Image (cartoon, rainbow, N blue to C red; front, top):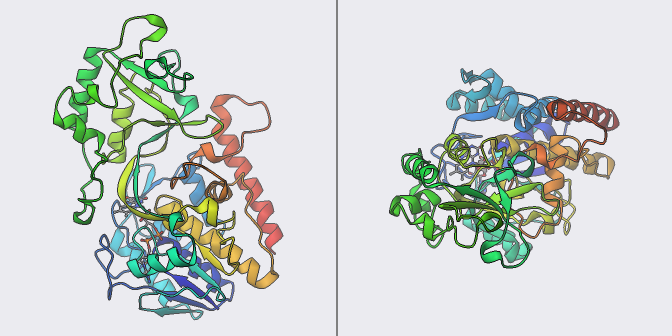
Length: 429
Ligand SMILES: Cc1cc2nc3c(=O)[nH]c(=O)nc-3n(C[C@H](O)[C@H](O)[C@H](O)COP(=O)(O)OP(=O)(O)OC[C@H]3O[C@@H](n4cnc5c(N)ncnc54)[C@H](O)[C@@H]3O)c2cc1C
C-alpha cells in the first residue's frame, strides 16, 4: 500500500498510475475541511489560477511533455482532452468539468481509498509520495523540516525570467560588468531614450496577475519590476537599469541598460537582473521582447512571485523523486522543484512509476534524460548552487550529438524523446 499526500495535479496522477498497476493507494486530501490560501473548492486537481495547460505542439517542451505523459495513460492529460475549451494551439479546459472527470475516476477506482483529512506525520517506513503542493499545510511543512533539514525547505518564490542564451542577439547585447569591475560577467542590453520611454510606457500599462491577499506581505524588500516603474519614470534608471559604467567599447553611455546574469554552469541560461515580476506570462513575453537584443528571446522560465513551498531538491531527492535519506519516501509536484500544472502532474507520474518499480522489482529505473520527464527529474536532482523550481523547457535536454540545422533542432528533440521513451517502456514489461 502507498500513501499519496494531496489530491492536486501530482497526487491524482500518482494515485491513478499506482492503482492501475494493482497497488493499493490511500489518497489523503485535507480540503474542504482545511483549505489552502489559494484553492476555492474541495475538488481534486483544482486549477488555482489559469485554466490553460499551455502548448499542444510536440515541438514545444510542454507539448512534448504531454505527449510523453499520454504514453503512460496520464489521467490529467486525458481529463484535459475530455474537457477542453477552444484555445488555439494551447490546451485549455473547463476547470469544473476537468476536476469532476478526475474526481470520478479516482473515487470510483477500486484500488484507491480517499482519506479526507490533513496528513501531518511522516512514517519513514511507509511507502509515501508527498504531493502537498506549493501551499502544503503548515503542520506538514513543519514535519518535513523536522524529518529533513529545515534549511532545505523554502516558502516563497520571487524569480526573474530566465532566457535561453542562444536566443540573445549578441550583435546588439554585449558582455561587461558595471564599472568594469571583475570579469565581464553580465550580458547588457542597451536602450536609447526613445526605447526606454516606449518600454516604460508599456510596462506601467501591462497586465498583472492578481495578487492574493495572503501574498501581500510576503515580498517586502523585493519589489516587482513593474511597481518600481510605476514609482516614476526614473526609478528603474537608478535601480536595475542603471547604465553607469556600462558603455560599450568606451563609446557613448546608453540611456538605460537591462542586464542578464549567468544562471547555469554551461552558460545556456541567463536571468534578467532585478526583473522579479507579477506580469502575466503573455505580457512578460511581449515586454521582454521590446528589449534590444531580446527581440527573439526564448523564455525558459517566466518570472513569478508567489508563495511556493519547495524543497532544495538536489540535496534531498535523486532523479527518481525518491528521498536520499529514506528510500520509501518520495516527493512530487511543485514541492519537488518543478513548476507548472503539467510539470507537477508529470512528476507525480514519474514518482509513481519509480515507486511501482521499487515495490514490485526492488529497483528504480530513472527515465532517460533525453525525455522531458527524465530531463526534469535530472534537473531537480542535479547539484545547483541557485536551485529554483523550473518549468519544462528544451534547455534541460542534453545537446544533440549529431550535426543538424537549427531549424530542425526541436523536431530532433521530439523524435529522440519519443524513441527513448518507447524503448524505456519496453524495459518496464
Ligand atoms: C497562487 C498560485 C497560482 C498558480 N498559477 C499557475 C498557473 O496559472 N499555471 C500553472 O501552470 N501553474 C500555476 N501555479 C503553479 C503550480 O502549477 C500549481 O500550484 C499546481 O497546482 C501544483 O500542483 P501540485 O500537485 O504540486 O499541488 P496542488 O495542485 O496544490 O495539490 C496539492 C494538494 O495537497 C493538499 N494538501 C496540502 N497539504 C496537505 C496535507 N497536510 N494533508 C492533506 N492534503 C494536503 C492541498 O489541499 C492540495 O489539494 C500556481 C501556483 C500558485 C501557488
